[in-house]
Every structure is written in C-alpha cells, then in structure tokens.
Image (cartoon, rainbow, N blue to C red; front, side, top):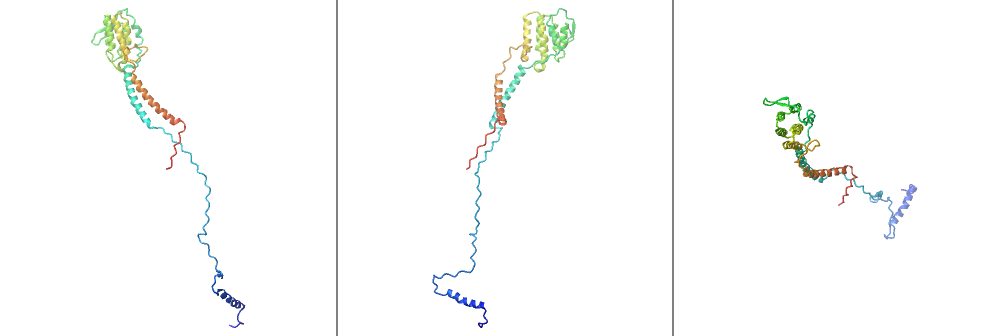
Length: 289
C-alpha cells in the first residue's frame, strides 16, 4: 500500500506499535513496572459481600412469673381415718342407745278421753251397793257400781281379757283379795310397746281403786307394785311414779358418742377452712436440675 493510500489513523497506529514493543523489550529487570491490566477489577467474593449481621434488639430482663396459687384441697388423707373413727364409735353408740331407750326411756302414750274423768271418781269409797250387771266370760254376772261399770266398759276396747279381769276384781268382796286382784290386772298387761297403752290405762284406773280400799299392808304393797310396774315401763315423767330399779344412763354411750362427734367436728372444721378460709399458700417453686 502506498503512503498516499494510508489514512491518518493508520499512521497513528503505526507510530504506536514500536512504542508498545519497546515497553516489553529489555532485560526484564525487576525495576520495570508490570504492565497494567486493562481488564476491570474482579468482583468481590461472596465472603466479602456478606451482609452485616443485624444487632439483636435489646432483650428486657426476664422476670420470674409469680407462682400460681395452690388449688384448694378439700379432702385430706387423715379424713379417711377420722371417718372410720366416727363410724366405728357412732354406730355402737347408736345401737346401744336405742336398746336402752326402748327398755327404760319409752314415752307414755296419751290416754283416751274415756279414762281421764274416772280417776277422781274411783278414789272415793263406794257408799252404795253395786247394782250394774256386767256379763263374765263364762256366763256369770258381775255387779258393779256405776263408776266401776264405766271403767270396765272403757277397758273393753283392748284385745286382751283385761276388762273381765278388772270386773272380776271389782266384784271381789274381800278388800285384801280385791287389792291383790286389782294389782294382778296391771301385771297381766302385754309387755313391750304394743301393751303400753293398756298398761297405762289399767294403772290409771287401778291405783285410785286401791286407794279407795281400807288401809292395810296388802293395799300398800299393791299400790307400790303397780307404781313400780308403770314407773319402770316408761321414762321419767312428772305424772308417773318413779322407778327404784332404773339404771343410770350408760357412760359408755356418752363416751362413744363424744368420740364420734369429735371426729366429725374435725372433718367439718377442715372443710369449712378449705371453703371459706384465707387464700391458699402458693405452691413451692420447683428447683431446676
């Protein structure tokens, strides 16, 4: 190519070429600076590009939660023993009391209105001859006074033969024999609660009838006998005679009943304390292992 045909740009490139060659020529001494790399610098490695860790937010100091209140405990183990003691002492005491009450503390029944007014009338000695006929069980006829006839009529409602016995006693002419016969009618009353009304009714009629007889040791003995029978048949009552053979109230019943009541009171007090007492104490915190 001729010099005329070269463009100005070609000349510049031709002039620069020797200079580039001269830069690489030489002995290769270390004083020569290494050629600069025209390529862009490599990107930072992934390790250098790691994002800075965010600082954790300040954490508030941990405060221990208040201990949970302990649940109210109504039943305790000792209550089982208390119940056994209460039952073991209370049941025998109750059975013992019922037996004693049935024998010595029965309440007297209420008398029929037929008997009430006759007591005062029978206390007075009869001044007229008996004239009221009353038929006996074997066809005989007993002659009684008007008050005695009413008394026998009131007694006829009882199922036993006490009415005939009473009529026969009233018809006995001898006072001492009559006293014995009258006392025997009370003794013949059926035992037990079923015969209480009959026994009390007969005593209500017989005692004034005995008091109307002439005084004698037999009469006094008969009065004491019927009083003792009725007084010991029922419990103490202001209108009834006393009982000389009545035992005192058993101390064992009081002791067993007291033990049973004390055990029940302990259980009741504990239940009330659990239900209405102060706040329960908090449960102890568990130690971390």
